[in-house]
Length: 182
Image 1: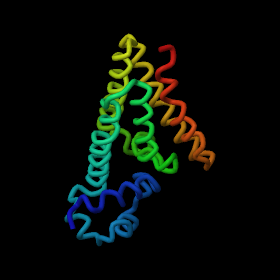
Image 2: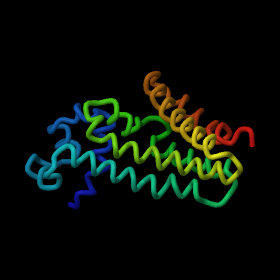
Image 3: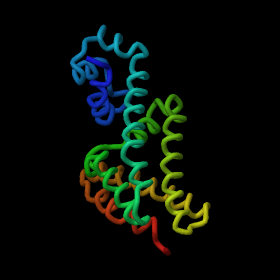
């Protein structure tokens, strides 16, 4: 089977156990591959597996989040589409963010640049929509950052409370929060 076949299972595993908790035995169980097969598909080991998961997520964002922001419609509609896609990615707040797992764990320095680039691209895409409707660049950038803070914070709170309602509420309110004062 091609290497990409195993990526969704690896994503689920890393989301559930983090980098350090994703042991070789758990990886083998999640993928159905033995140790030799794992290293055949991922000669760089666990780091290469995470890179493959991040590649998968980057493609998902490029295929789902960015087109939602670049689509036709007013800013409110475009941000609502973005939130719909985010709800899909995070399974209505049931799944944690892979970026947060990597940044808060032992791998922060290993994957920081990659995660930073993803966040910057997302913030910039939101800021672009806001500038199109008349926001100054600085305020548009701040609103994009606030949006990421809201999404990430609501995911953490939802997991801390074992209740996805904070995330769902944030996804419902975020388009209006981004567009307020316009």
